[in-house]
Length: 551
Ligand code: NOJ
Image 1 (cartoon, rainbow, N blue to C red):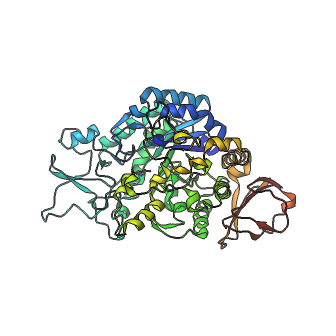
Image 2 (cartoon, helix red, strand yellow; image 1 turned 135 degrees about the horizontal axis):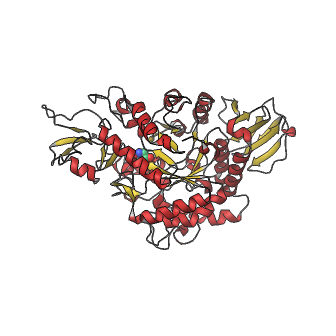
Image 3 (cartoon, helix red, strand yellow; image 1 turned 90 degrees about the vertical axis):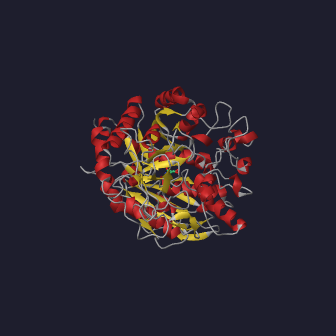
């Protein structure tokens, strides 16, 4: 089937279902809630939804531990509710992509239950290893979620199995052709149902190297340099593409840990070797930490700019970017790269900063109103398996402060729809804590205020879709060394779009790039009233201005 690359003209919205909206009054977000809010998403200008996992799952990792790939969890409304949402979304010209989690399954999945009993054909569906004669574990790989080894002993089978994530998330053996057949069956099943593509969870981990060699480079996350981008990754993705995906006009989005543009182009680069449409890179998440949110550093604007520049420049004309600043795996951006003090201003700057880059933007639920981090009183209030299992030697208070800053749960509190009871998320007590900032950060209030963050997102999305230079224009950056401003333009033969963002909490003068005369441009988006248009302009705290020039 001919690919139309429709995803390049749309803005996506990520729904993390448990916390989006409760529609059936049981305290947990579900598909009935999504149905209620589709018109809201449409009004925001959204053209696609990425659903974090909706499948049947014991919920150890909030759905990223799938027990049944063919059914929607009853707590989300089951298969019928999903069919309804899919239909209603398509009626509104909103595409729907699913999360495909096939690096691992839940240990409650039937395949694992049979594999541990050596029932054929499931015996080799997972990565099993016997105990070594010296009593040591099969290798030195770490679990990303358990704080120690990635190997778990299974009494029933009398062997260890590999779990890069939680103990109940067992890694599949993708080298087994039968497992790859299962993946293709799953892809086909959902595509035939009408979904429009997949976000592929930690897909760069699916090919483990022969002999499972020890990690020799890293002291943490041991193993990742061995199994990330493994030897058969391209081959397996190509198999999925040629045997299934090519029959549909769909999109694939690969989560890709530690990936750099050059490696990414081996997967997404235009040409015959392309096996994926876009990657989710992590560089843009590392401007205030070292590789992981759990090793915090002060925010560096230069580092953030370097990350975006790297991908904008190196993919230009060669591959398509996926653009995001938030998702369910990282704390909220206003609290990280912006400012809670200058809440509205910085939320808007962050929006414009990435919305006009080249690629397909994704907005994570609650980001469009500038939701901020959650500060629970004690660490028992955290739900997330990664947060709960994070090990440090810090004293209790400092540990709690680290979690405030690093935990994924900050992005997982219920969406703040109103300032009222349970933030309008549910009639009954929600499954998880509501951030008490719902009082002043919520959709209902922002709907009424034309100058709200929400309405700024609406406008930015509308502009992004209607201005051609945003899609294909060249990226040029100015003042690269500045620790105060992010300034770039997007240019083609007919138009130039100039984006100027301040990341300072006080006013500072900005020298407008020489090639632009603001007096000749049109100010199309800003977060303050703008009077001046000279060569040097005063940028107020977290001010952003976007100008369009017809050439
Ligand atoms: C990446 C997902 O985004 C994250 O939420 C999950 O915990 C891990 N992969 C394991 O599936």
